[in-house]
Image (tube, rainbow, N blue to C red):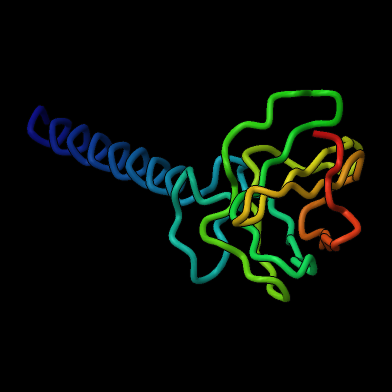
Length: 141
């Protein structure tokens, strides 16, 4: 009788461990927001999409830097452009926070000669396209 109870207890313990292990595996497979990962993408807590928008350079000059700040904030942060952007080309700019479409932003671009271009008080949403023209030349400084 003791041997049979011991086997039953061992069986139940093994089942409990298997269920617990499966729950942990399922938790790891799910993204932080609780949704399952997209097909074909590796599951990890850091695999959420980075909010981004596209800069279209129509200035006639190669852009070297792109800085973004919330309107009214004088802290531009770091350069968000990975490599120089020739005129006529576009680049995806990744943001470190969600773009909800309700916040106004200022964008400053610096060309290879150090000249600045600006787009001020614009609404950015993920996947927005911002065209920068020669008329956006910044004469303020």
